[in-house]
Amino acid sequence: MKKQSSNRKYNFPDADLYVQCIERIKYAARDIEEFEKYGYDKDRLMAFKNNCEKFKSLPDDDELVGDQMITTEKKYTAAEKLKTAIRSIMTRVAIKYSNRSGRYRKFGTAKLGDMTDAQLLFCGRRVARVARQQIDFLAEVGMNEKSITKVTEACREFENALNIQQDKVAERDIAVERRVEQGNKLYDEMIVLCNVGKDIWVETDTVKYEHYTVYESNNEQKKARKEREQQKLKANAK
Image 1 (cartoon, rainbow, N blue to C red):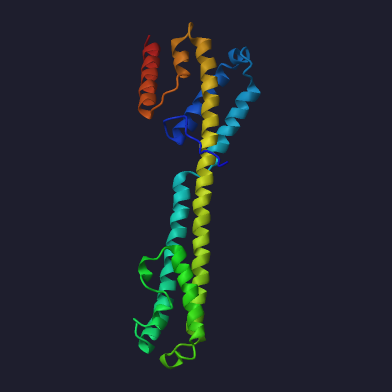
Image 2: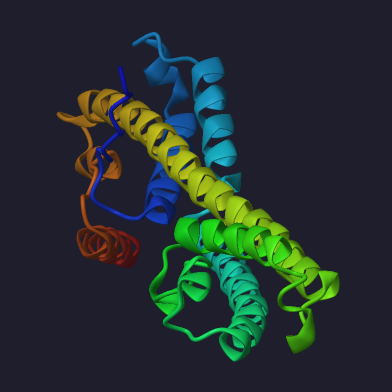
């Protein structure tokens, strides 16, 4: 059975998740004596922090997309090289035979510019194979083993570029899945930590209670932080 893709449990960017987790870890370290009364000790807090650092080191999607784009560009370049080699063969075939003839049709190069990657690769192999079969008949128009070798080498380079590009697509899918899974684990742990923190301070300290409130948007987080800073200024002014 195919594994279902994971869905993110949080509605803010991964960078914000990391910042929120680290911020709550600092608050929990401050309140660790109270946390230990709930069975949430220093070891668990340290493990949470270590997982945050591992999450931070994971490649983000911009990196992965960039790598994928580079390999895609190389694939396009290899494809154009293969098409050029095929056209060189077909120009000679058209000189020798009409491009409406069966011998020309046998190469199967119609709509060369519209072929999929797989179709282009099969076309290149077919052109090399058929050209080698007819090399004696096409010798007078400059067909030789060197021309055919250009096609076979271009096929090999294109196939290699295609495989690398497909590998990068798969790597990105795997990396995105891993990042979502790790992010969800951090989010779940942060929620546990915050629930403990809120329970500790719900009746005794409004400001510390607010430290453990999770905001689903960056804008809400900024507003809350601004309000806390204003409260601190008022407290210091007294």
